[in-house]
Image (cartoon, rainbow, N blue to C red):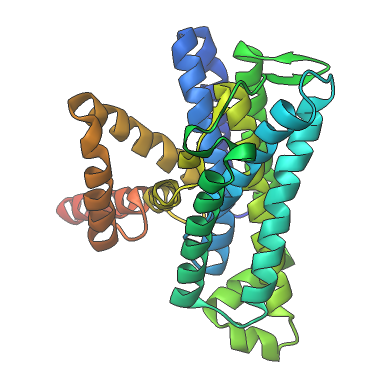
Length: 326
C-alpha cells in the first residue's frame, strides 16, 4: 500500500468509527436524520463510481435511485403486502429494476458511442421521462401524491431504529471499501486509461464500451439499493425521489467531496445537507437558488472539491512557513 492508500484508509475508518459511536450521544430524531443522509451518501458513492472513475457525467442518476424506491414501494404495498418476504422481494425488485434500466440505457448509449456532453444530455432526458412516468402512471405509482405506507425493512426481524442505522453504516462502508479494493487493481487502471484517452485504450486491446457499461450498471444497482432502503425508513415514495433536482444535488455532493475518492462523496453529502438545514431554517424556498449559486461557485473556485482545496491551502501555508524559517 502506498502512503496515499494508507491515508485514505485511515480517514475512512475514522469516519466510520465516528458514525458508529454517534447513537451513543445523538437523539432518536438525529439518528433517523443521519441515517437518511447516509443513504443519500450511498447514492452519491454510486455516482462517484461512474463519474469519478470514467470522467463521464451522468445527469440522470436520480432515475436509478427512484427506480429502487418505487420498486420497493410497489412490491411491498401492491404486489406482496404483509408477506414475511416482501422486504427481500422489494429489495430484489427495486435493485433489479434500477439495474435493468441502467443496462438497457447504457447498452444503447455507451455502445452507440455517445460520450461527453451528449451522454449528460441523454441521461438528463432519462430523468425527465422517468419522472413523467412516475406522475402519469398513478394507478401504480400514486401519481403526484406518491405511495404512503411502505413497511419497515424486515429480514427475519424488523430492522428499525438504531439497528437500521447500524445496518446502513455497515452497508455504506462495506460498499466504499469493496469498491476501493476492486478499483486498486487492473480494472481501476483500465478505467483511468479510458478517462485519459478512450481511443488509445481501445488500441491496446481493451473493450472500453464493455468496461464502461459494467461500471454504469454497477453504479445503477448501488443507487437502486440506496433508494429501496431509503423508502423503508421514511415510509413513503414520491416523484421528488426521481426528479431533476435530486440528480443535480447528487452531482453537488460528489463535487464538494472531490470526485473519484469515494469517501469524498460521503463527506460531501454530509456537508451539503448541513448547509441545506442551515439555509432552510432561514427560508425553505431559498434552497434551490442557493444550490445553484453554490454549484457555480464550486465550478469556478473549487473544481476539485473542498478537500483538495483545503489540501492546497495547507501545502501553501506549510511552504510559506518553511520559507520564513529558512
